[in-house]
Image (cartoon, rainbow, N blue to C red; front, side, top):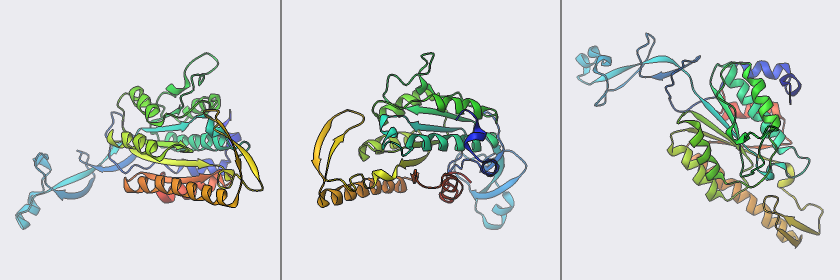
Length: 309
């Protein structure tokens, strides 16, 4: 993962260069970027009309419309803005399982691809891992949960690649606590926040964490990454030992048809609860299987649902 060219095809990179992370909200930042958004401003490019509301700048009222209709409308304009993007990647131990199915590799490739789309659009992007693991540190002892700084130049992709290469998953997930700690370090910089995780923890915990981001006025997007083995882990087994990879607890079980049906039903309910919560709260959600085509997932699926455009 040290060289971007080794990770992605040149065709894929060219496609990413024509895309950017999409935001459903409007944010002003101190540095202007390359995208246009319809916001109240003073630039010369007219965007649209909307009803006048108490407190609006009266200088933007269209008095010609008022003269014809006796109703107050104000002009809005198109102004260059820059959107800060936060990409948070789950680095708990569960991201290493099932073994050989590449969950964490898929997740960090996705973080890298989305970062590249941001940087080529000259948008600020920051990448950070989250986990309770105390050993989530680099060779010099620095805590990798601090993440990269905000980067905006295309060359920043190499710093992001190096950062992601150095993250070794471990420990448990304290989703709400991890997000709270990250926001404390983010310095109040709002924008888009993309969570990449297997979300294999209680849905209520996921709701609390995602609601925290919503209440802080972030535009939240969630990508759930699962391996194919997680959809039917008991295939061809008559007995098994269950091991919680984050706590180490163990339990012997007999694999019966009823158990397999119960597991499938429980997983379906878990995925459905997370998906439905996101839809009800205007959080873009997508499920990614590691055995799916990565480039197709990014260029087709994520553009179709509005993560990038």
